[in-house]
Length: 293
Length: 169
Image 1: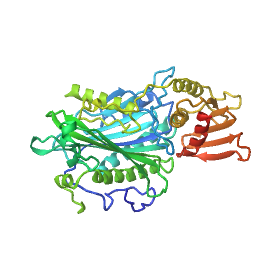
Image 2: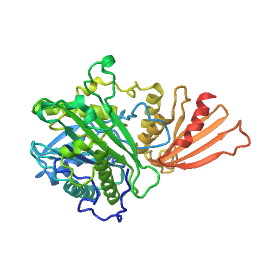
Image 3: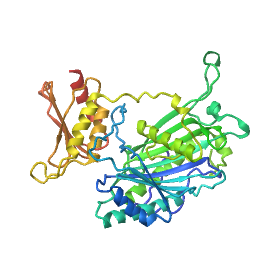
Image 4: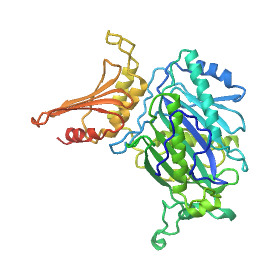
């Protein structure tokens, strides 16, 4: 991963960092910013209801979903084969709450150890408002949530893992099936296969992971996960390739500013990774405008 | 559309549950585009059934998490859920087939101690909180080697050799 210039700590990033790959029409479908924090066991449904009161104008709808298991990036050992879960509690687990507005692009999710903001593309021609805008909203929501926790004496928000996910939907013009032309999309896949033996290539799931280092650290602090998978666009049942890139890492400290500083670095890593795992031909189709190929 | 969306959401969550090591856990909602039905055709090597030791240790950890504050008579808090989860995650990464199962003990600092005392080996891993750990190791068959004590944060590589010994001896 190219090194990034050091950014002064705790300085809010208001604009796009220089040198980041940039596209006129990126195939972005969804952006997810997540902060995992030390579990707040006293934060349960009734308290979440109180919090909702303050955001109900923006998010009039609330629904419950199973909580997402905690995730911690560790190193030095082989990958675990089974994801650990702890769920045998005498009381039902506090759900993950979705705060949403029908048809709106923004979604806020809260559970006992996570706060998540999703931006979702809702219409074909909807313009992605860019990370800075999504971040600004998320920062305001985290600040409000943190203030609420203190006011209700529920604990302190102490981030321990931060995550940025970009989900892209890649299609081809004129009805060409991108799933069978994966080598035109990513250099991670080569189609040098013997069709006489294997038959015609139909599709593939390509997963890769990379170590993530922040601009402050020599040792890795997290990972970047890349996932190409075949999918179908619901609106028109067109075959597409879904590219999901996630960076997850441990922040330098346990403050909210530490969390956002890491989110900024993770976003840069996701965007650079996106450019690195897609081909120059695709960049041209998406209107790459930072002058690099 | 609403029905379709619900289906996609459910798929996305299921995937997050089984593959958090390789994919996002931030619950992308995938509103407009994808169904993962076709991706499900790809079996994943890490979707193994849960092993018995994991269930036993998970139950012990949950018991420790549920203890009342002052469980030891000295005002010590119960281990937090995060610490218990981290302990299970670390164990999951270092345990091998036929590795002996550790004793799981709540510590006087509100952490969790994992201990192996067998085969002339003493190995202890004290987890104070996520990324705040300390290991202590001594192989009594290597009389010339002093015991090893070190702090661990995110890199658990130093546990590989002791676990290999414990598993193979």
